[in-house]
Length: 183
Image (cartoon, rainbow, N blue to C red; front, side, top):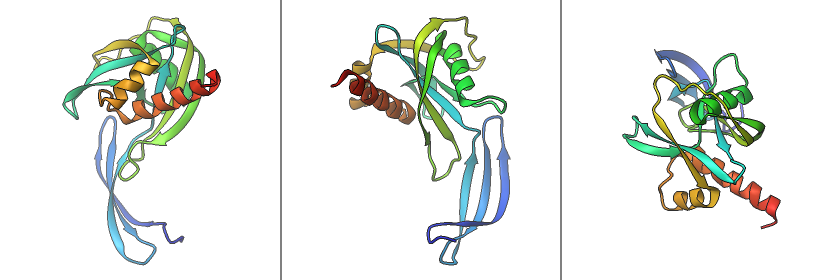
């Protein structure tokens, strides 16, 4: 065992819900001491930055019950057991914006909150968008927001965009597009 590694001694399932599970693990630290870790089990997710032909990005405005406020985010959703991240990205893009991507490119993947959650989010950039008949999730009410990427970056700097996956993805897209333009 490396000096940073922890080993599970016991695991107890606490909760199993529709979206997440929770377990409590007893672990042994590398120095022999014992501790407890509470872990949220999540199947993983995707998030996608859709870019229109005119360069504007499509965002969604949605009330988030857990934080008690409306947030501006990139389209995102939870992976189904039988789908790839790319399939999920196309599905969520269609459901939330009414577009599909002619070109879908993976930016990176990141852990949302590795201190307590297994959730891994795959980030994508979607271009060559085409209108489609997307069907919204029954439990979602959202508005599509179109804005220039630079305006979205300013909204991050002003604290108007607070969602971590959205901030990370938009900054990665800005860097990527700046590299293409030689800026």
